[in-house]
Image 1 (cartoon, rainbow, N blue to C red):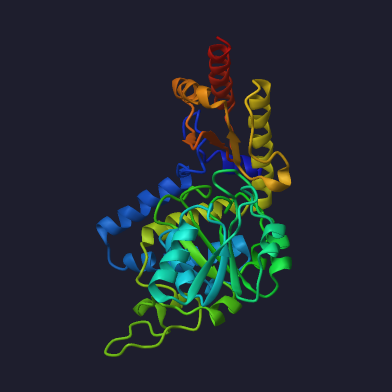
Image 2 (cartoon, rainbow, N blue to C red):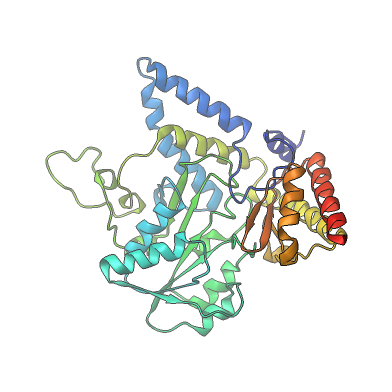
Length: 373
């Protein structure tokens, strides 16, 4: 049995699920780990709880292996938004970003500007919806201290060119919201200074899992505004308020959920035998199948077709007057997707059951038949 087959055997969701960009149903191994750790917590046998406190280290080490950072450069967070807030509240200077990014990015920038008045959001001018090195280069000024991008646009499915962006921004800090690609995109995260992601989507670790990874440059340049007692170099700083750690751990407020951390470490451990590159190849092949079926029924695909510009998301845009009809057809055939802003987003992982393809083809057949009349 190949490593990829062992990985895909852990997918337990029912056929028809094409919504990993919204949430990834937890894997069989993650579900088992959650039950096991909950049993430990519920019984609290002598000495058993110490193991729960080790989960932070295990999860940080797993994240480090996945993205190529050191474990000490990673602070676990409950979700992507918390990580972005920590990082952006610590920035001074102009921050170039797209107003069309997922709200976690612009909200963190604006809230930081409103609260501290030391970071200034600078909005990328509209030249289409895709964030490209060229668009960024055209708006760079000496006042720009950092650039923030989404690794994969959740509305268009566009995969950004991180290496190209790094080349044009020079030594400015590069913030990456990686949630829509983490675990399924073989991205050069080493060119980024700040990487934030959650584990509830493509890594299938469930809610409450996430991280903030920071390069040494980021640690030097960003102020840990929200830094609690667990963000110091003293294990239990009683009777005095000690200074923040000079590392990523400074960007924490309190201890995390050990069971969530165990889920995260388990999910990332499942990726390792296959490798993110292997999973990305499987996702690419499955995305091609979805695009081919949409083409078969002449349903317009508006997400990227080039494998270099896409991840696991396919976006279709039927005529406005037929959108409801397509949604109904998908629902009636048991196909789970996300509908937003006149488009329908289908997101596929490394596992793609033949029954799911049959259900999707059936939904498109019903839609096309109804649309003809």
